[in-house]
Length: 113
Length: 116
View 1 (tube, rainbow over the protein chains, first blue to last red):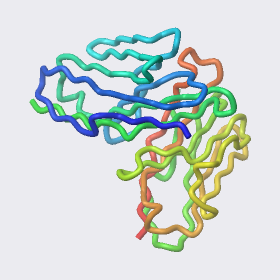
View 2: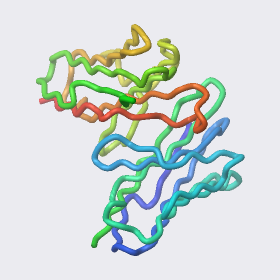
View 3: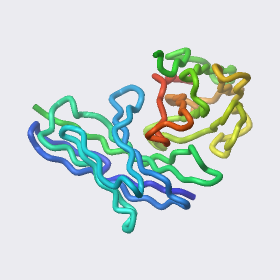
């Protein structure tokens, strides 16, 4: 059974801090890893990383994938109160499970002014 | 373009009643997913469809849950009879084939279900 574990489960920081969120996984026939942000409503897509794209960056957010060690990190620099959300990591497998995502428990990030 | 549409947004019902949740995926998307989210268990996949055909329903908790997709623009998730432990937020998501981010799923706003 595919498994995704995120850490920490919650994190409280002040504006301007840099945070690192972790995601480790076990999946048969790995295809990609995705990060989503959820702010009291639907999850919204941040990044997708694959074997051919192991690092992504968008503004203050960046993510890397270590396919050998089976983990990914999401970095947020110069955090703002608007970054407060639950960050979800998910993995996608290929083969007969194509299209299916397995999500981790999420990391609750709270950014204080 | 309209995103994934779900209805109702909130549902409060009593134990034993039938509940039907509805979803309209983004036009042209080939995959539709039903998820349940709770504090204890996080976001769990219940069932998903490809071209209206159920592919994997191994996440459906028990026979009280059923899902249908009669056409490409509509799906339902039914719980009958409902129980208090079914209280959760139910999300519908859809995904196109051939998208650049090929595993990205687009989520609807969710239905918050409370069973008293």
